[in-house]
Length: 360
Ligand SMILES: *Cc1c(COP(=O)(O)O)cnc(C)c1O
Image (cartoon, rainbow, N blue to C red; front, top):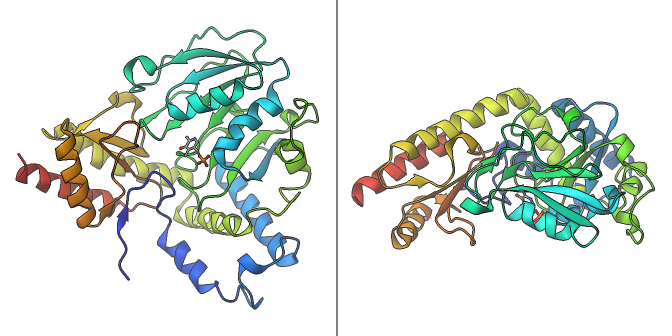
């Protein structure tokens, strides 16, 4: 068996221990004589899997009792529509535009109501997080929306916006479980799991109870009404059973590692190794304002497209894969999610130093 260092932005690296456990349980889950993939989502065995997953997540994130956890299908991109469907009572919302994902979320919301773009970093190709301490948020806005970690551009909100009393809705797809957060500061915090938590096919949403109601926009599909999902404990229809099972294993792995504080320390360590080198390099340059840098996604360039391509090819051959930047920005991007070991980042940096010397 030969494993690479996978720097993909998503679907992304998972803990090897988790993959091995899944492999060991593939043919016979705990004496059931079948795989988790093959069992009824209404069975007793599965009921324990989904309940334990939720309990472990609540424990890890310290989720207050007045918040529901729901497992949703359709990816973060479908939640872009679910947010206005479930929350736009006044037909108006404020969006902070810090990259492609926030832009897409805003465009989707525009189908359902008025979107007021209260801040944006589009003027400098999303290389920074705008000052959100005193925004002009309409009094009657139903919520303020952010994408907390910008997977493509590599910036992160290190301070949440001042919403002036409005509900905060945050897409944390690419920083989910990377550090402790204070859930009580959010109305809705959600993320697609394929970045930092599990395989593709699911979103986890943590939603304050009072925001889960029957009062949704007319025409909202049954399945996209959060109350349907919350009332049925995410079992209104067949959920992504196997993805929930793997996420549950990842929650246990994080707990065993020491929880979100330890994840944060590990992620800071990895990011420091990487950014310290970037800042000292004469060939490679980071593309975002240092104080707004993400711990998870680090875009970088040489400034020469041919040299970028040569680097990506040689890195791939050396076992450092998926370093190509997003198609809209080019260059390179190293995603260093929870499951990426520090050795992976240290070895990548050593490889970059060697490449720099050889190509100076
Ligand atoms: C990947 C990503 C999305 C889109 O996720 P899908 O599950 O593919 O819809 C949305 N927001 C952020 C921040 C992402 O990183």
